[in-house]
Length: 260
Image 1 (cartoon, rainbow, N blue to C red):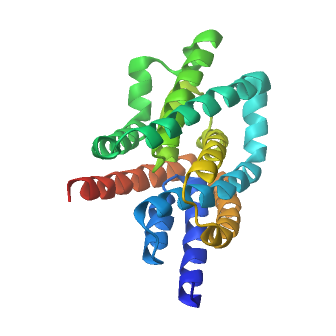
Image 2: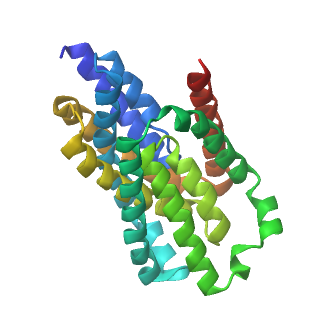
Image 3: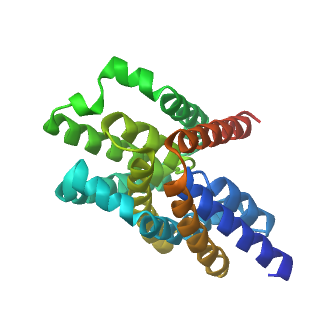
């Protein structure tokens, strides 16, 4: 590996960690960078999954204040802890699907899922008027809805993962009466849990290029922490607008790739 490749991967890791913490979709930065250094598509995919995981962990640390507030004010620590097995099981199923089934058909569906998630987030207030505001949900229904959203999101994350953050923020925002910063903080936790599963699965069964991981992962850690701190300071409307814009862009790029 030459110096330009090292610089490219370090910059891509930093940018991906930042984007993942704010909106999700950083894999669209690191995956092409890994391809550009000479990796095939499959090794690049699994290497990318392992590389960005530390950035998710850093994002969780960076948003720890909002997580503490969310646990105290809305669902409670017990409910948040209860989401851990839900996320781990769903992400494991997603990884199993990826390793056992062809990806082409799902690749055609993914862009529409991402675009739909961006649309849900953009029109979140209107949808809340149709389905009911989160504060009007009973505690039991809120918990069940939260587990359902996390399960579907983690399943998707284990299988594919691109723009997972956009989808999680859109879904969680429909069932949590919380600020965008706090919803984004919970998104970071779910993403990190799913990332842990992919690290184990692909580390054991995938052709990971560990030299590339050693370059991308530290940069993603820095980016994840910075991104989480930036997200905390952005007004809710601005943060939502950025996520919607990025989600729409990601969806259109994925759609172009799927049909080209």
